[in-house]
Length: 110
Length: 112
Image 1 (tube, rainbow over the protein chains, first blue to last red):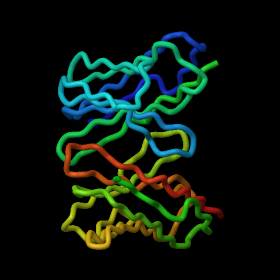
Image 2 (cartoon, each protein chain N blue to C red):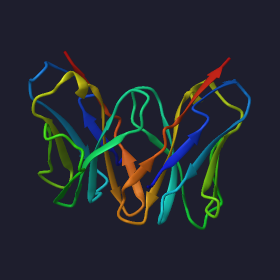
Image 3 (tube, rainbow over the protein chains, first blue to last red):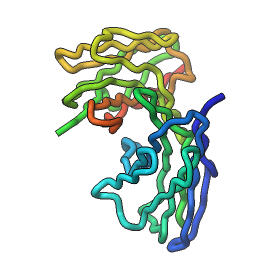
């Protein structure tokens, strides 16, 4: 089945230690998004790629970076995770009106 | 400012009963409105998507309505089951690209 896959499902990282979350898709969607969702809050858009074009939200901290080496894969890099970065990170893809979320990666910072 | 407001914030219902969740939005221009179900610790799963011209759409026991004139939508859950316990999120897409505006969600708890 075509889908959006996020790995890992759970990630524990140390304070200040760089961490990378991955997202892959088999939908051939041209747009990929990264959201941060904290407990009981709506997802917050961090950035998105329209094809190869990177679009950063104005309030996304510099600590968060992204890479999209090809259509299928997109990575979220957190350069120096702080305790406040503990959250669920959701990847989503879209093409026209179709919009699909991955199952998310729950990040814990210790 | 584009906003999506959902009510109630939380809801407890008995298994087998029906319930209705509300969503009001001010997103303009409007492209489509989606309802998602999000289980705890999981990503949102799409239930319905409606465009401007659609008034109602069903997905099993879930029925969504849309009144584009009053900018209101509702999600009706029929004959609730324990597995319906989740957060239900109303999401509106504006015409400019695919940026979504999320509501705060309604947390539904179905009790036996």
